[in-house]
Image (cartoon, rainbow, N blue to C red; front, side):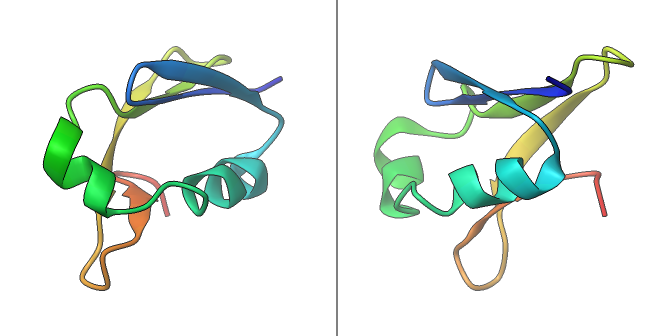
Length: 67
């Protein structure tokens, strides 16, 4: 496992960024309005780097700082 995704306090282990993107699609963007995004982030388990999760212009979850 390469990534650990935290969404609203719940962790999920992910093999690659494709799996991260797939998991981000299952959360309704409205949830960010109710719960906030402070508990949404991604950790790269190989480098220890932490990335915030945000919403793009079309209200879909994205990993900020990753291309």
